[in-house]
Every structure is written in C-alpha cells, then in structure tokens.
Picture 1 (cartoon, rainbow, N blue to C red):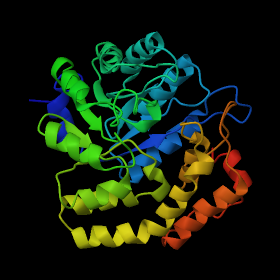
Picture 2: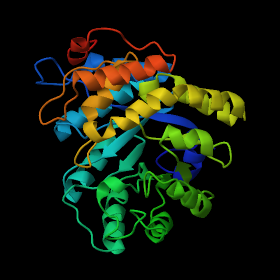
Picture 3: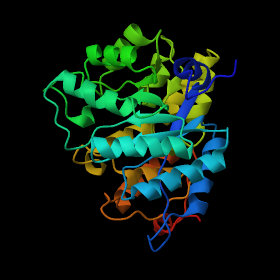
Picture 4: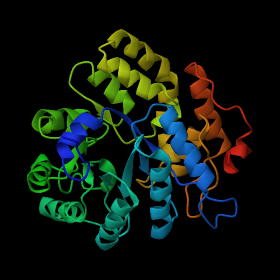
Length: 337
C-alpha cells in the first residue's frame, strides 16, 4: 500500500519523517515588491543537497497570504518528492489560519505546524483545545502540534505550556495529528520525555533543538528533529542524525562537542536577537546565508541583525571547524540571487 500524507497520516509520518526538517524564509526582490523565485528555489535545492527531509515555509515575516501561498507553490515545484513541505500556521486570527491551511494544502504542502496568534489569550485548557482542533479540522494535511513557551500559556493555563490532557484529546479526536514538536516547558527536556513516554507509540515525537536531540537520541527512541534553524550548521545536523540512527554514538558525540562553541555563542545572543517572545527571522536568514543559502532583504516590520551579532555567529562556526561564507556582511542584505 502506498501511504499518503493526506490519508494515512500517522503511518506516513512514522515511515517518512526520519531525519531533520529545516526552515526556509521567503526571499524577496531587491525593491521588496515581490517574491524572489530564484532565491526561493536556490534555498530549496540547497536544503535537499544538505540532506534535509523537509522544510518549513516560514510565514512569520511581512508577507501577504497570496504571496505566501505562491511561496509554498514555488517550494513544492522545486522540491517535487525530494522534500516534505511544511505549512507555517502562524497568521493573525483563527479565520485566517483556516483560510491559509486550505490554500496551503492546495499549494502542495503535506504538513502543517500549529502556531497561536499573539492576541489569542486562552484562560483554560479547553480554549487551547478548541482553537487547535478547529485548525486541524480545516485540512487533510498532517499536523505538528507545538507546545512552546512563546505562546504565553504558562503558567496561566499550565507550566508545560499545553497540558498533556489537551494533547491526548487532540490525538484522539484529530486523526491528522501525527507529530508533536515537543518544546513544552522550554528549555527543560521534560516536555520531550513526557511526550515520548505518553504518546510515542501513537505519533512521532520531534526534538527540534539539536542540543537536546543529539544526547537524548542516544538513550531514547527519537527519529525526527523538526522544525528548526538547522541550516546554521549546513549539512551537519542531517549527518549526525544519520549517525545516531546507526547507533554510532561516539561519532555523534564528537560532532556534538565540536559544535559546542557555535552553539554557546548562538545561545548567548538569544536575548539580544529574539525579543518580545518572537523569533528573529532576519537572524535565521543570516545564519543560513553563512552556509550558502540565499539571504536577502526582508520587509518592514522586521527585527534587525547588527554587525557584532553577525560576526559572533560567523566566528562560532569557524570555532566549530566549519567554513562559513567570508563575504562582506553587506552582501547578505543583497542575497545570492
């Protein structure tokens, strides 16, 4: 039987989603009036070359919904069957997210990463359940649940961000829920362990932070690291996940420690780069540019990245034994295509 991401959600995820899923941030023309198709295609091709099994089409930039759907169409056209395309369900209202989910499915996306609008202020676990179920029910795409501190649900609703009782109900009532991106209670690893213990036999558990995945995969069954800015390390994360699947733990551990200087620098920059409980996609785009991805300008409103931060991120890769781009930083804002 041929498995379909739109029908056999959990079986398809278990057999297909083995590896790492990175992030693709939209590229725009220099005048910022439209999408840069060449830049988008370049990033998809490089993600495939680097060994990623899928990529998240990031929507948390200044982009209209029609532009975003065209962005996904370009990604899917370039990827074909070589990369799973993940829709980023991060729009301003429930209604917009339902509309976006239907359009993303039509554009060829196979998976959807659940997010929550900044103005969504649930006071009970039931409200989180009802919102999430409404988005899940709007599509045949497989769904990645995403408990995470960024939503602001903790400690008001539960310290784990989304309580396991809600996750259990969603798994029971939404058959397209097939992955949990387990960052509940971040930076604690308890969310990963709890989700694997309670739900690992039902859905795929993703540990998206490589700092967690590489150690934990040596002592517990983990097959997926999605979605994250793994492109900062070029092809390294897909490679180390392959080593872990082969139980070559000494080699994987050697890479873990080799990456540690870059990992620490990246973590120490977090407070200055990612303010307001919102990820700095300009910084993520720069991280990818260091490894050959397109880079290029983003529209306002966007968070910024300054010389000292760019230099630190590049120096971290050099200390990790990598060969990042040594082009002038100004070239990043122009892009490679």
